[in-house]
Each structure stands twice: as structure tokens, then as C-alpha cells.
Length: 439
Image (tube, rainbow, N blue to C red):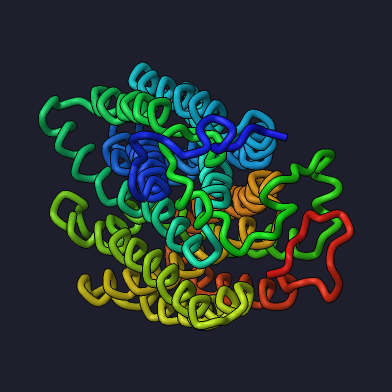
């Protein structure tokens, strides 16, 4: 059995950090902000690069797909890696790798080198969400876990909102796109220093007060607190319908986010708007996503504090916000700028509410030693869906327009919600393997 805090000092640390779990949550948030700034840099610069290299939307989609291929498979592979290495070492290695790759993108010379660097960036960034989900499962009790997930997931929208300002300012200041990648890529190295200084598992942390450790473990079965699970494999996890609900749900849900993250600048350009003149509109969907993350986390946590089962609280949030994304359909037929960005803002708010629930599920449902693996499988499902959608968006927008894309982006999250409600439910009898918990 791993050493616990009491084995180091029965009276606890001399100088505990108050509310340490939220400091850890803050580091997860910053890692996601940096992660998304690195990947959004290319999308913000897309109009510049398409003009310089005379790429079509299909060419640009090929670069995005290179990222997606590596990101898709490293979600699952990275999740298993972090379950084996632990979050401290696993995230240190992956952030170091993708920060180096982000900086090296400044050396790209054309479409082939861009595809190579984006492939490597995807490989490095893949483990971020599985690793963050694992840390949230270890550091937060049931009633706060959705808040923690909302915190780190909101980093994607904050990073997406910061990236246009940072990237365009650096581009205007230097007159070249190459320094932009150096500036954004260097942020990860600062994060690693803070992570290595602050992070240890809860039972081994030298600055965690015993009272907070007891609070973190509140409501968890004893076997989850003290008993590791060995022999957890993908094959074993895929026997559970809950795993398939998470994988298939994210397959349908997540492509909407990458429609916003990867294509929104080009979508605005297709409507006749220049990103430099409409930077606020580019920012509104990311603000909506940030608000949606926290609203869903707060609503779900409120219901749990009132005695609702965890599964019921998560399902209710999804059933409210998944279908409401149909409100985006009119955006396919209008050209008024303010109405258009407001519709996208609400749809992204609703998407983020659903995403927070989906990202919370692995830590709600599974033993901690399986959380990153299941989260990674869900990320692989999301990646496969995004690979398909990225290719289709490039082809459809080149041949027709973005109109069919926007309509599909409003309908698929409703299907994701239906799959979740059907498949992701508690077992009628306890799991003899101890992998799926009561939720």
C-alpha cells in the first residue's frame, strides 16, 4: 500500500496550504489554458497562412487532421500512460514535449512541415484531459468534482479567448507569423516549474492538512480510498456499457467544439467579416463556453448537495442543455453579425454545460485507477468524431458553404445526450470487479 500522510507526520504538516485542492485545480486550469493557446495559434493565423501559401479550406483541414490523428490515439494511450506513471510525472513529460513542438512550429516551411508539427503537437497534448480528470478524481469529493472539472475544462475557452489577442498582437508587433509560435509555445515551460513544485498525490503531499485529506475522501468507499486496482485493461473497460456511453456520446458531442475552435475565424470570413475588425465576436463563443462550464458544475453540485444521486444530477443537466443547442439552426440562414455571434455564444454555452458533465463522468463512475484510461477512451471517441467532421467541414465548405455544417453541429449534441441517458446508468448490482462504482 502506498504511504499516507500520517506515515510522514502523524500530526500533519507544520505549514499546510489552506484549500490546497483548489490550488491543484488552478494548475489544471492553467495547463488547459496553455494547451489551447498552443493549438489555437494556428487557427487564429489561418487567414494569414491561407493567403501566404494559397491553401484551400481542404488543405487547411488536412493540417488539422494531422493534429487530430495523433491527438485521438494519444487520448487513450496517454490515459493509460498517466494511470501507470502517475499524474505528476506523466503530465510533466507531456507538457514538456508539446511545448517544445509548439515552439518548433516556427520553423515550418509549407504544408508538409505544418502537418508534421501539428501531428507531434497532437501527440503531446492528447494526455492533458485524461490526466486532468484523474487529478480531479483524486483531489475532490463527489459534490465538488464537477466544479473542478468545470475549472480545468473552462481553460479551453479561456485559452481560446486569449489566443486571438496574443497571437494577433504578436503578429502585428513583429510582422511575421513565426514569432507567434515561439511566444505561445514558451508558456508551458513556466507551468512545468509550478507543477513540479506544488503537485503530489493527496496521500503523499507534504503540505496537505489531515482535515482536508479527510474532506477529499468524504463519501468514498473504503476500498476506493486504500485499495489499488491492478489488471485494468482497455478490453476489460470496454465490457461496460457505461464506457460505450461515454465513448459514443463524446464521438457525437465534441466535434461541435472544434467547429468553433478550428473553423470559426474562417466561418466569419465566409460571411464577409474580417477577424481583426470583429475580434469581440470571435471571443463571444469562448466566453459562452466558460460560463457554461461553471454554470453546469454549479447546478450539478447544488443538486448533489440537496441529496440527488450523482448520476441523476449529471443526466438532468445534459437533458436540459443538449436539446437546447437546436437554437443554433437559424444561424445557418442569417447574416446579421450580432444575432449570429449571440446564437453561437448560447450554443457554445450549452455545449460546455454538456461537456462538463461528460468529463466528470469517468471520475464519478470508475475506480481512480481506471479514470484516466476511461477518460482517454472517451477522448479517442471524440477524436475519431472530430477527424471525420474536420474532413467533412473542409470538403463541404469548399464545395457548398458552411450552412450544412452549422445545421449538423446543432443536431449531433442532441443525439449524444440520448446515448448518455440510455447507456450511462448505475448497475443494478455491485460490480464484482470493483471498477464501476455506485453513482
